[in-house]
Figure 1 (cartoon, rainbow, N blue to C red):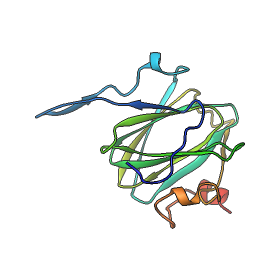
Figure 2: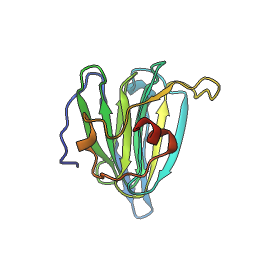
Figure 3: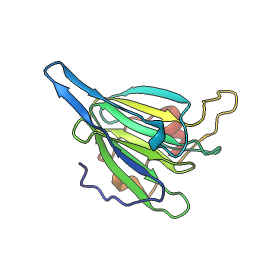
Figure 4: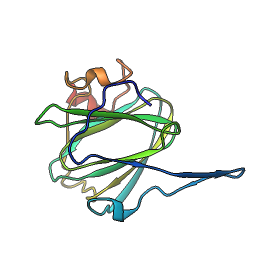
Length: 162
């Protein structure tokens, strides 16, 4: 688990994942709709190399996300843009939990190792009308929460940081 500061932002849910392991490997129930405040409608998976930061993003139409790290370790960072309150937790193989991030909170993650990351979301992505907005990874409210000071960023996340 991370030694970075953690706090509790209202409505973030931390859902422990139970791994059932034997000599063949393991099985895990990743999502149960009855435990979530609203249903998810799309699932996305990404591969990120160590040192990548994806985000911080937030959604104008209030899309909520359920984050889980399927392989490797990720640092989840969430920012309440109104209060400045933050939440962070390292999730993945060493800490199998899913994190529910509601509505318009800015959120992202850092690949602490090479990883495979899963996002269940409550709104389908519409490329004709994207609603994803950015907060720079190096915003003073979150810059000290990341383990890297020289992340690999997408063009979109680079432009949010300039």
